[in-house]
Length: 194
Image (cartoon, rainbow, N blue to C red; front, side, top):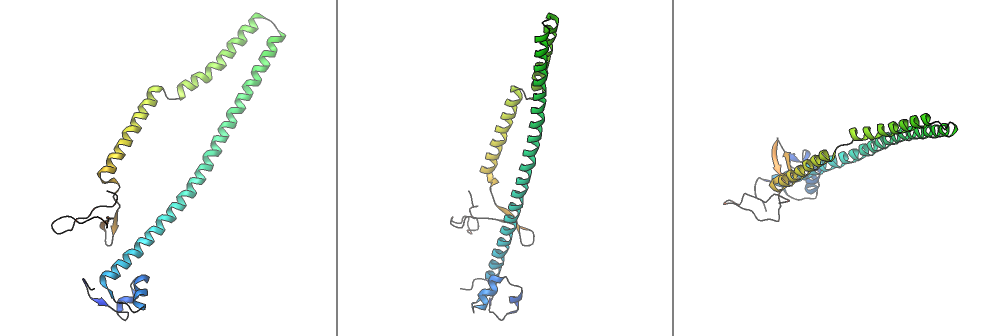
């Protein structure tokens, strides 16, 4: 059935610029009209975009794997350094205890206790200064909840609409073809996902 445009045959001049899909149909002796050609080209363009998106996702996954390796290596290096420092501190503590055992002097014992307290206080103070407070953690949790609520609200208000540029810079939207059309001229369609 011919709806708009003129019907074309395999011998027409459009065949050289048509998509492989349309050329294949014309080679089989079928009649092809302008809308069919445009639909075929649109399908080919969508397939190309899908291949590009898949390629981008593969490259992103590879980058993420490399980033994961780098992060793991950095964590391992920091952990090794901290464990070496802890081992060194433990060795110093052992030596201090041996000195206490050799010289049972009250003054040496008091100085050793003061040193041990200071050594314990430095990591505690550093931990207190570097780790976020419960109030900061609660504020960050509240901010996360606000952001999640904003995302949910945006999705309800059309944030999941698949909007793209088609043709000569015009906007196109993916619709639900199974939903009925609306409006006096039946020119309103339901957006896919809503």
